[in-house]
Image (cartoon, rainbow, N blue to C red; front, side):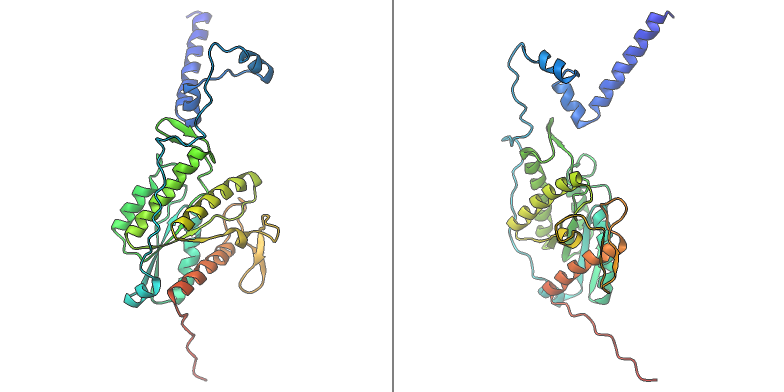
Length: 304
């Protein structure tokens, strides 16, 4: 085989590989639908200065009529004291890796209450942005089919700082279209739980070390908070529990005994065990207050 044929064959293989790679990602598929020249700034400006025809502005950042609209379910569920009067209070924890950590703290803290059970329904590396990976709505529906719960503790968001593709349109993170889709998924999940008469407590995400990542997390926190207010659902803000007095990232804090301990893991995102116990303690306090739980008093030991 001649050198020219070898070069042509290798070039063809390279082009096929690039196209295949682009087709496997939302951003790549968007580029394939609207390809742009890969030139430097000056060359790109020159190449686009005299287009053959006007190019319409991309509509990925706007809410199109075809996008799902949020349907708020503001109905109330059976109060926790009434549920507790009928039997043990059954709590389920749903969400991503952050929720998995919170489950550890809730399970340990709730051991003090013999009339409360805590079950785990979490799955790390999941969220509401990638239903093509794990459809949280369908997954939760399946979990509830085999569970009898009174309370759902939910924490999602650490994997959701990315764009979403719906019907061939990529909606960049934080755009109006993205917020409409994400808000709809939040509302649908709340409606599903309420349809089973389950009280919902949605836990926001903590202050993150990376300012860029934290900015995305706060977009998610703000959106979820607004949906919880509309749906008459409790939102527990984790930021005040994980930030310093100025709202900045704080890796250390005081535990229940007043000692200064490490509250965060090395990734600047997740909580250490001490941090988990600190945050879960606030959730437990809220549940105890709402349900009217009474912490059992230690039995006095007879004198020797």
